[in-house]
Image (cartoon, rainbow, N blue to C red; front, side, top):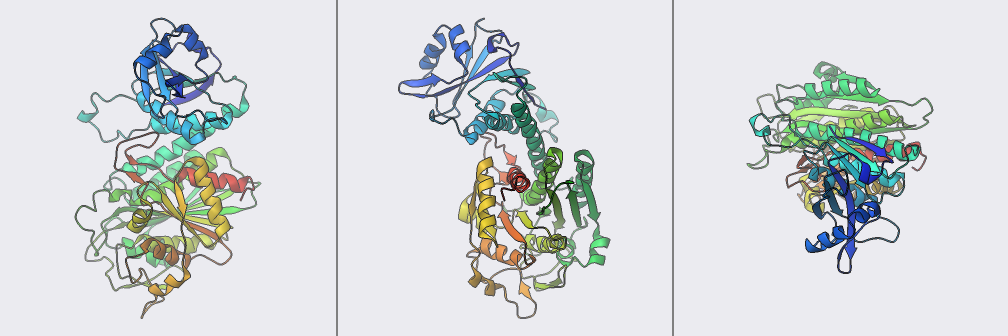
Length: 502
């Protein structure tokens, strides 16, 4: 596991394996960035000449390795391109991506010193967060294939920062806590479904609560039946692995407001009787990414001691076809009494979320956000890298969007057209679990969920189906596989509520 620290030691005298400096785009190629002055002087101009010979451009993410030949105690300099030099400093997202790229390039290294233009505590935190997220890899199931793979960089020291800089120290601590929660969410998404049943997930939540300092309550299938949670039970009844509803509770003695976070936790989604087509099942272990994000956000809020009350609700089930599975045409009686005609058992996420949203609203939170890998339609609309935000309150939707943007998670506001509600009218029940058309399916799902939000609660729905699981190669601080998306957005919203920004 990578550790991050700050230090005032001069770069040239630091005993490390690698020194990291930056470059930016110049008129004739790469130009060394601020922070590298002493190193450049020790090379007596040869470092710039070497970069020129390597055709370095300073483009963002560009990497070059240069031996120091005794000019520093470290034997190697790693030059990371930062792109154009902005007049007002690099954006936090540029630094975050640079941190991730550097971390992956440092795999196998024991200690590295970083001399980059990290001006201010927020810049320090952004780069540090990128390092800790970029250093992530999922190795749990590797045995023989582990041979030859390099461990993550062990120690990264951010240089040029005074040891008594309390703001920088706090930023590093926050980055570490945030990355810990994001990486746990990534682990949960990457764990194969035979090792992460609803019962297993609930047990992990209990352990996380003990370690982070928040309360956890687990409702098993018997408690769910007694309580009338027909949505969660209906989705999970086809599996031998029975469903769970997990309540997470973090409270602060000075907090005056509460935000509820609800996560879809389908630990494996076959589609049920409405079986998914061939080629669509292989990654469905990731269908609990919303619940993983909620667990991560609550844990981080607790560890940071945010002055806000946060409840988390993990709606956990496995959606499988069997002789006991819910059939298309069945009617489920949801928690709270409303009835839903199920026409597509692969539209199951909204059913477990509806129960959890209704239950969460009983505790009268001022705000509620649900997070779910809910619809392929949202991927059609926004692609694989961006999630959609729908809400019953435009001001709250904009606040969630702003929070996501500030932490570097790509999101986009989406509408909830009122005239689409009639598509879910059922001839025999209160509503159907799908509309009459494939078009606008992501919006239909949001409109369905809105039906279960109590009056007076500001609600937002995050459809993270696209960015929750990355099937391409790692880049920046985004790994291959589970990404842990929405943990940082939810945590920032909680922070904004604590700061009375929302």
